[in-house]
Length: 427
Image (cartoon, rainbow, N blue to C red; front, side):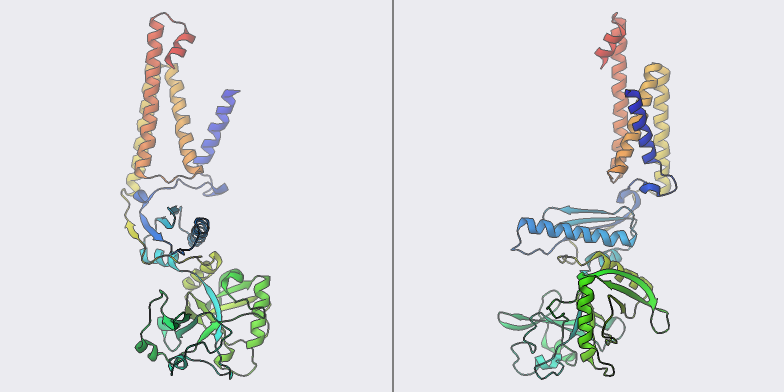
């Protein structure tokens, strides 16, 4: 019975460590560390609220970790390592990833999607940045909306289009213009963008703001007037469908093309596009279009599906490093072959010198090795160069233990002990 159990376990370990048909049943290769395949190593600190409790901080870090895992998985990085360090830090290792800046962009983007419309004053006129800069304005023109206003560069071209100029927030000391990091924006810069509109959150009739949290799906696609422009097709959940249609019905006008009927699409404070609302209802679907490449559309769709980070990550990261592989792929392959040859020679020596006990020890060594590799894959454990060395050393120690046992058994035989007594003394 014991022999049958050992045989079943051995068969399972072989099934685990030898992938058949690539990734069939999720059996992939061993997870190798940065020192073997190279990659990007980053450490971030999350900007957690000082007033948050320990439980709230832990929950926020769990959500940050999960969100980043979704983004990286969708990007196709093989076997990433994403771990929490202490209370507010995150370790990220991306084996095989060669572009540090692309890795940072993928991770650092908050990914907060929101829909905004242009603010109006009590007379129903559109509000611009110049209106807030004129005279001594001390409060928002639309007093019902208390959230920060956003001003962007809509006159810019290329990468400058839609770039954030400033947030306008209400503080205890009055209105304050800040950048995305909370730093004050000087008046000279603001004056240059005086003709830019003031964007406020678009809300449904119950006051719920339309954000990416209400999305159920986002997929890259090709569309536009000519059917050749990359875009992102979005679908709302049930609540998002209702709110989106309520906003569309309010902003829709069949003929007028002014900004008062535009719905601005913002990602992390930057304007992606501001299309005019062309229908009174969209029944749960929509399109985000802009000057996208297909790669950018795929990246945006991935960002929206993974969700927004619950807290911002400090920029730049506390630590960043592009790690080169210590050993080349060919040398790693040669090292595995050398290790297997060495183990085979040890097993041949054990069999030649100890005969049947040596054969049993060799079979046990094979079982131990396959079981160790199976555990490394099932856990999964990232194997570094030192880790592989540790596995080889542990197998050597296992052989050494068998040598000590067999030599003690031989001594007991010479002393006239029975086989059972010699085995008991040896172990």
